[in-house]
Image (cartoon, rainbow over all chains, first blue to last red; front, side, top):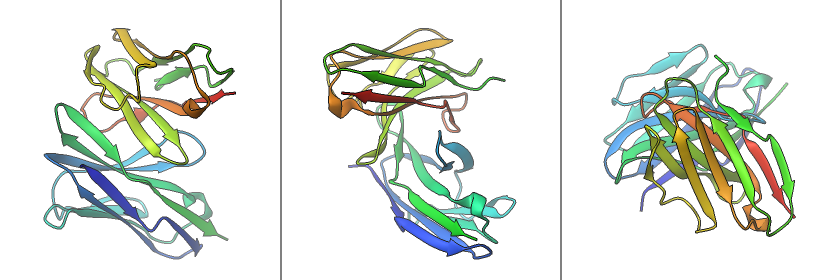
Length: 112
Length: 112
């Protein structure tokens, strides 16, 4: 059975802290891994990762994929209260068509 | 670009009634996805289309659910008859690359 597991389930930090969110997966015919940020509305796209070891970076956020160990991490440095959200990891895999399996998400709360 | 448009934004109905959710994907996108999000089950892929053709509907929970895409700019998700356990936020997303997906604002469905 295809599965995507995120950890931790939730995290509370203070502004300025650095956080690392984890996503591990077991899927057949992996194609790519996506990270989304979801506040009180629809998920918004952050990163798409297809190759191992190549860091994607956008401002204070960065992410990297390890296809050998089947996981990805999302780092946020110098956190701000606006980073508070649920962060979703999703894996695109081919199983009778291109499928997308989401993890359960990590709820991040950044306190002032 | 208006992004993915969904309607209605909120729907409250009584058990047994038919519910129709609507989605207009981003122009030029050839993939359309329907998701359901609940606290208990997280974000689940229900069905997706490629060039208006349903590719995989294995995520559709049961026969009460059906989805159509009569043309490239419109899709519907219908629940008939609706049940209280169908209460959730339903998202529509579209993509051009089969990877990066752009989500609509969602329809919050409450079945009493």
